[in-house]
Image (spheres, helix red, strand yellow):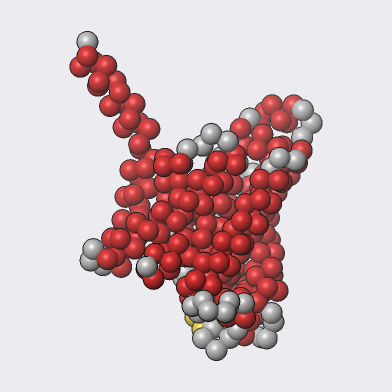
Length: 294
């Protein structure tokens, strides 16, 4: 039971990363590698502020703002300098590695003696994992509701339309460059918030904790879409959150089965590749069935 609670709580904290990746990968139709820099940026910002004596909520909000700034940088490189989105994300990610080192002052910053959002709000009678589960669920619910509300507004609809058909939305007088920057801002703000929460949960921030986060986010998105569907934007948000939890459950299972932790990145990459190829596999399987019936 403790393993289940721990797995679900971690899945909720990482769900913010998954939502951020979903906003760029599905909504904007951009493969944004900035997340591998903005995730540790959020962790580094929060950890530094916590060690300086700031309130955990202030540290999380500051981390979110820092991630937004990282997204804006990528957006400017992409829209104003016409650098391809993939390359713009890589450039920002590389730059943020040095920025994160500057913020923390060293490669690893422990938080073992610091108050975090999970210690100051620890509920009576609940252990650390259950407290993390409750707080994580509350934060994810608030973020999901705000995203659902925002993308139902005129500006949010313009961001979604920019990803679907930029030529059409441009013909309607919408500045698509501004919409791309706004989408990247929101995405990386959520990713950095996830990094801040994960750092407070784990008790440390590390400059290398962003390695592979884009694959983790994609795995959560793809697994959620395959298992829970994409009938509407609300359904997509729920699917991404549940996909993050399922991904963490799969990781916990394979670790329990004896898989070396060093192989997790390889396993995740294979899992994402299989999930992405499922539509093609299914189409060919259906074609094979029709051919057999004939």
